[in-house]
Image (cartoon, rainbow, N blue to C red; front, top):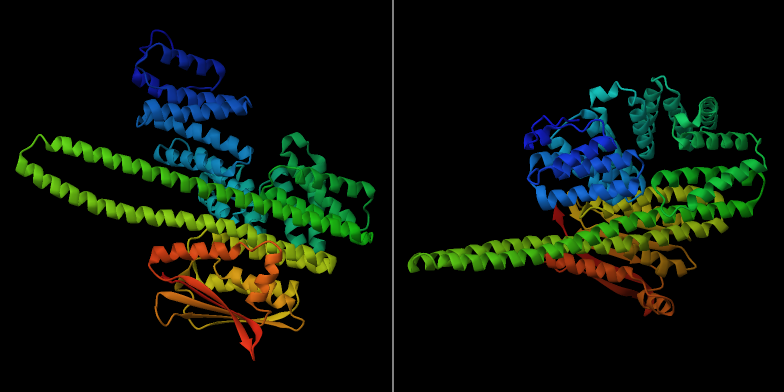
Amino acid sequence: MFSQSEKINQHYVDTLLIEPIDSLQVSNFKNILLSNDELKGWTKYYAHKSFLCLKQSKRDSALFYSEKTIDVYNSDEAGYTYAERSLQRAYYVGGWIHKRRKNYNESLNFFLKSLDIHRKYPDHYKIEVYILTSIAEIHLAMGNPELSLRYQKQIEKDSLYKISYQAANLFNQIGILYGYLDKRDSSKIYLHKSLKYESDRSGLAAYTNLGELFYKEEQMDSAIHYFSIAKRISDTIDISSLRADSKVFAQTNYHFVDIYNNKHDKETINVLTRIVDSVTSLKKVDKEDRDFVLNVLDYLILAYEKERRFKKVKESYKKKFDVVTLFNQELFKEDLQKIEVGYKTKLKEEQISNLEQLNNSQKQKLDQQKITAIVSICSLFLGVLLIIVLYKRKTLKDKYEKVNLEQRLLLSQMNPHFTYNALNSVYNLLDVNSKKAKTYLLSFSKLLRSVLENSRKDFISLEEEIETLDNYLVLKSKLMAKFEYVINCELTIADIFIPPMLIQPFVENAIIHGISALKESGKIEITFSVSEDNSQILKCIIVDNGVGYANAIHKKSKNKPSISSDIVNDRLKIYGDKFKVNANFQIVDLKENGVVSGTKVILETPIIKE
C-alpha cells in the first residue's frame, strides 16, 4: 500500500486509497496514523474497519466500528472534509446491519445520513443506487409502499442503472409496489419489463409476482399458468444462485395449484403449516413476512374448505387475524418510539438553549464593562430588547413544535385503540360467516391504510376525513346489525384542513354503545358546518337514535372505561391553546316525551386553510 520512502503527511493520508479492503491494508493504514500523533484520519480508519467486518460477516463488530467512526468524527475530526467523506461508509454499514435486524427507524436514519454525505461528495453512482434501494426496502417493510415507490422511481431515472443486470430486479420491485397500491395495470407492465432480461433469477421473481397478482384478481387460470412457470424455473436452478426465499415463494405458490386442482395431500398441508409456524414465531414481522404468510393461510383455508374441515378454516382465519394484529402493533411501536424520542429530544434542546442564553447574557455583561458608560447603557438596552424579541419568537416556535409532538404522541395512542376494535369486529364475524370475513378483512386493510396515512399527518383535508368516515361506516354497517347513516356537508371540503382522527371515536361510540343495543334499525347522521360564532371553527354534529349517553356510561362503568374520549379531550385542549380558539365537545341525550331517544355530539375544532 505504501513504501517507507514515501513522505507521510496529511495530504498523503487523505488521498490514500485503502484498496482492496482487507485486514492487511486496514492494519497498514492504522500504523501510518500511529506513526504521527498530528495526523488526522481515524474517522477514515474506523469507517474502513466497519466495512471490513461487514465483509467478514462480523455484524456486531461492524456495527461497533460504525458507531465508533461517528463518535471519533464528532469528538476529534468534526468539520474536516476528508473525515466527513468517510462517514458515508460508516452510516451505510450501520444502516445495513440495523435493516437486517429489522430495527427500521435506526436503519432509515443511518441510510438517510449516508445519502446526504454521498450527495455532498459523490464518488460513484452505484453507491447512491444501493442506498436508495435500501431506503425503499425499509419503507416497504414498514408498510409504506408509496414512499418505497418514490425511492425506486428515483433509481429508475438513472440511465446507467437501467441498462445494467440489476434493472430486472428494479422493474420487478416497482411492479410489486404498484400491486400493493392496487395499480394493477402498471404492476403488470413493470413485471413484464422485468421479463425482458434473460435471467432465471429475474424470471422466477417476475413469474411468481404475476401469478400472485392474478390470484388476487381471482383469475385462477392465469395465476396457475404463471405459478407453474415459476415452479419449473425453480426446479432447474441451484438454490445457492439466488435468494432462498425466491425458491420458497415459487414452491409454496405451486402448492396452491395442487390444492385448486384437488391434487394436494396431507404432506402439502403439513408443509404449508410449517411455513406459517416459522413466520408467526418471528419476534418481528415486516410487510413481506405478513403478505407471504397471509397468502399461505389463504391456500390452507382453500384446502380445509375442500376437505370440509371447518374448524381448521376458523383456526386459519384466527391466525390471519393474529398476523395482521402483530404487524400493526410493530408499526405503532415504531411510530410511538420515534415520536417519544423526538419529544424528549425537544425538551433537552429547550434546556440546552436556556443555558446557552444564560451564558451569552453573562458574557455580554462582562464585555460591556470594557466600554464607556454611555455606550454600555445603550448596548445593554438594545441587547436586552433584542434578546426579549428573539426569546419571544423562539418561545412561540418551540411551543408550537412541542404542542405538535404532544398531539402526535396522543394520536399514536389512539391508533391501537381504533385498530383493536375494528379487527375484533372482523374476528367475531368468523363464527357467523367465514366467507364474508375474508371480504371484510380486505376492506378493513384498505381502511387501515388510510388511517395509518392520515395519522402520520398533522392535518388532513376535510375531504379525506369524510372519505375515511364513509369507509368506516360502510364496513361497520356490514359487520354489525344493519344501520343507516348520512353525512351532510355543503362546505368546500378540499380547502379545509383539520386534525385527523378526532371525529371517528365519537362515531364509534355511537355505534358500539348507542345503536348496537337497539332491536330496530339504527340511524346515524353527521353534519359539518362552520360555527356561527367563529368562522375559524368547524362544527361537527353527530346524532344517533341509540340508548343514550347516560345509559352507555352506566353500562361502561361495569366494565373498563373507554380511553378514546380522554385522548380526544387532551388533543382538543392542545389545539385550542395552539390556535387560540375554544376547541371542545359536548355530549347530550336527546329525549322525546321524556324518554331518551338518542345522543347528540357537538364537536368544535379549529379550521386550517390551505
